[in-house]
Image (cartoon, rainbow, N blue to C red; front, side, top):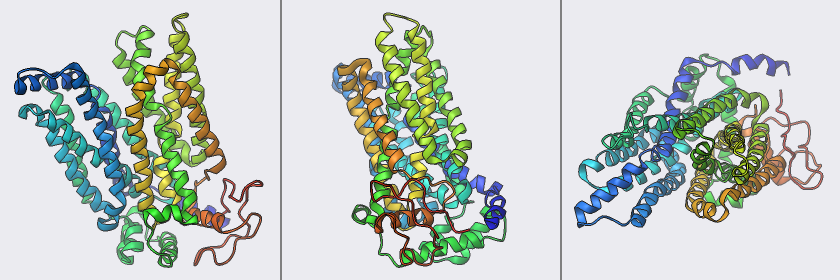
Length: 518
């Protein structure tokens, strides 16, 4: 224990170079947020553009229904692109590595930005739709590449805090898009193409900065067997010549990997060692998209109008500010409270706020004062989301898997997130039409189910090495309850002196893995 305590200051040392590399990667997260939020502000301008172009081409405009379908398609195709991109992450990082994959993906950002930016000049609504598809593929890649790279270069003691920066980048991107989309900035009839094309600038900036960043040391050592290059990268990232602990941990993980066959996507579901963590990864991603956060943002303008806010767009931006502030709060809490605890607090808070939103919206006609309760509930819902379900699913997936299965797991979890995003976007308008304000009851029930699953199945990963976590799942998959850990379970890794705590009712581990050997 003395050794662990002595090591803590060294593990928590943050160098300027490490911050530079993490910040460079998180530009991809900002891109994801910006392109998610940017399409809302110019909606009326794009509808008018579709109308005018159809009039110029065909001599008569599209019908209002046709324009609505085209608008919905332009919005939804972003999620389709995200599904394609996220599913491609595994193959891309295995072939090109983490850093080069981020560089290559920026080509898509430049292409998509150019298509959308030149659409008005070319009088082509097809370029808007195609640009949104290309940008969607780019953002799908970002949602896998950024958490993976950040997780692999971060010290174990700070991996959660740095992992939260991905979600912070996302919410800042959304907020920037909301502000730039104001009519007196870039949301005007003349400047909306520039608003959509602006995504090219961060892509250029990140591409330049990436040339000064190292490849992931884990990828260099475990995948490419370039021990010296990995050591040099770690020395620069950690700011010390003594990186023996990091190197040893990676070598132990690499030794275990060398005894396993390559992990494919089907293998994640077939192997008992990976089945539990991949199910956890998928459910956590679904808890983010099926929580109702998009529905709350959709409803927020109407809620603020009902409360007498004369400029509801500024109140919506205020919700974006709350989004950002509580992501920062989560950043500081995640290594203290832990991932599982924050996820539970977030899900529980969202469920309570969803009930309050339902009550206030259904009774607002009888009492106008309930509109203010709805506003408070909206801000509470957003704050709770950013405490747990917003940031945690992205980076905890990288923690649940060792180096071998991680790319495939990131691809599957990202694909699950984007698919749920797409399904919510397609079904929510109809659900809202059928259920009205009671649509939030559906989300409340889902949030309660996600809370129960997290409480029963999700382990705490705070302070654990990647391989410690993988070992915990391997032990739970291979041993009956109340029996000691066998020596043969993990080759070349420190062994625990105590058996894994087991659930008294099922043959699965309780939420805490065995303590690491001091």
